[in-house]
Image (cartoon, rainbow, N blue to C red; front, side, top):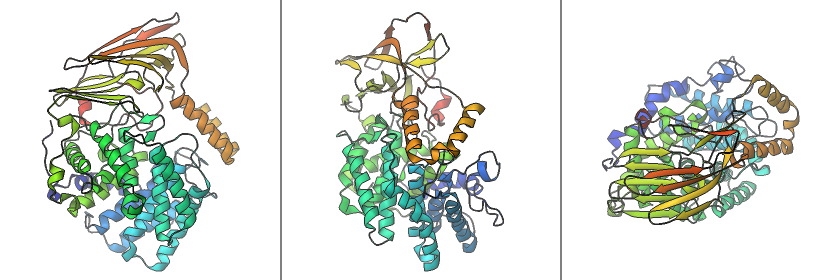
Length: 534
């Protein structure tokens, strides 16, 4: 087990991780004022010229950079004029990437990304708040005018292709931040309230926020990050209790080996966004306990964090680390409260217990020396730890059709059949196709033709997104194969699969974990990946 320690501002691992990555982050931004791409952060677009649009997510880096600057954590002897020019350039870049309807994009031209528009608007608004005392009224007005079209887009549009709570939380945070800056903008308040109600309406009584079809601890840490910001500026919204329930769910997924989440989640993510939970450490005891544990995990590279992020996901993780670093530096989270020290993470409790989350379809089985996480609504995904080692990771069975397509029993099905007893759980579900396909020049050609034509109509674009989500994530094609999986609980956890294979199909013998759906945020590295498991 990881040794419990107190958060020590002299050992600010968040700041250390930032310093390890800051040079590559600063290298992303085009600082050439003679260039039409001045201020853009997507090097694949402005420097390499290998993309025909700019991913706007990078413009949000202004938030993390500004937080380091005002917190006294900036590691270089940078002239203030140079620093402020860099921040201004990111605003200019955001302006140049904004479409006529106020939207931004990260995946393709004319995408109309609700999430990215919200993300950049939020980060730029936080930047303005942080630098209030460093900019004059004219500069602030200029920056707010750059953000205004994004807010208008968030007010008049909606994300319709799926219910993704962290996306909606991003928009809620942006809209309430905008209202704060504009003296109570009623349209922003109204839309922010509608989106917040939608998130809370779909929050399970078990504490988790919906990510596509189920609970995903990794993305829930990001959702909690944005909702924590809303709570801290609008305590009258009474978000403390929903956030408390969120963290009381999340702390079950701080694993004995120091990792977080994993294949048990609806989106199979392993990353951890620290700041929102850390910001609540003095209000929610479980948040303090979880923050201490995960800080030690980051120190040991045992959880996916900033250094493992690829560039499309770099900005929000960097900003989260910058906020966390500033909290530790200010010792905000180090107030001595006996109640905080009495909490014990579920994976560290030394007495056996079993916790079933029926809405999520996840069972936690704790023995004297083992910790098992089983998602039975994903066909029986198993993460089984003995001591502080991952002993078994079984994500399911894989079959192959005569046409070389792959299918598996690992897909979310809220209606699958299962039988839970004291000693085992039996799960029966239908195998579904895994849409594991790489892009081709022809597919890109078709996509670009659509981007230049029919995707200019938002209704057609959103309908296409809905169809893609169903195909790639939520409604995969079912195969005529049923798998019965029996999982026997205990220290020596065992798994038995039974199935009849029709003609034209065969079972593949695999010895590696897999993700059956399209998910850009899968597969990030952590130190445990270098160790063999069963």
